[in-house]
Length: 433
Image (cartoon, one colour):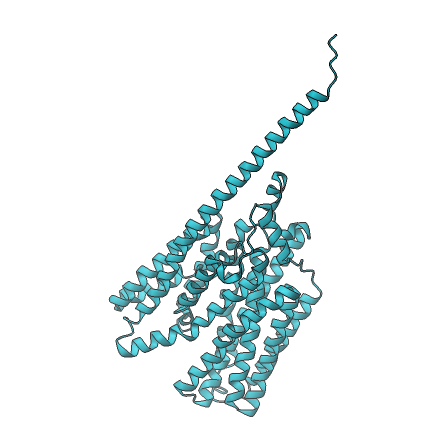
């Protein structure tokens, strides 16, 4: 166990020992630009893919197949990405993610040229695997790139640029690529996929020539040990992680609707920028609980009122939903030590909830009404409230243990000083004759 002198050092991030403050800020800026660029590409690809589906006159069943291909990649590939970066590091993980992203984009180009729906599904899986890898790497790296206390603030700030970019991408696509002259063909848009692939390669080259301080799981384990924590349990026995995964999976119900309501997406993006500074003044678990409660309440309002009140409630929901995903991710992956990177991979599996809950909400809408279908979303947000409350208790208990541990170190140090003083007195010769 580390002594009392190491406790204060444990509050420093591992990267502080490997890079200057400028290099740390540069690394964060580089990862944030990755959030922006892949958000832009994702928003652009989403519009292109919808155009592709319209061209093929895809049925609802085939559309479900596309959802399975995309979200299934997050379920299948996120744990693989977590294992990969655990063994080879964040930078190589980013290379792998960008390579898959570029390969998937080129696959879309080939599918557009050959007009094959099967190729379209396969390309969706490949490019989603790349995005899943990037999400595992970027989310995890930002959370450990600095002090643990500000992890939620950093991730929400970086994710804000992702939301901004995913809104800008479709606007550019609709203005420049889908005019009346080419709305019914693939001739013009197929080359956009090449541009997207080239963008992925360009980002990879940028990272190749940039210094990115590596943060190993051993570094994270050393931080825990310095705080007097040694936890060698297997990953599935970490309750705060597994509960976080369930929370992430269930709350991923209505977030895709942001792409259908442009003004609500603006609300979502602005809210994330506006809410992020609050994480410097409030504990992440407290803010998560409050935001989850607001989402639950106004989702039920939308479910049982409808009309203008229901519409206004949807705007409020998107506002308070803004920080839920990154804050849940941060809380669930904290204190994982040697399992930090694999925990990040497991958390990104939660995105796969998009393959389950939106269809469930759609089925309920068909069976009852669109308004009542929001009860499905309310259940997801209620899970957020429960998780936030549980993490408030978890954080409180953790702080008490750390305070007790710090106090024991101080007491041990005082006792040692007294012993040293007594030893000096005994060893000192008596000069009084």
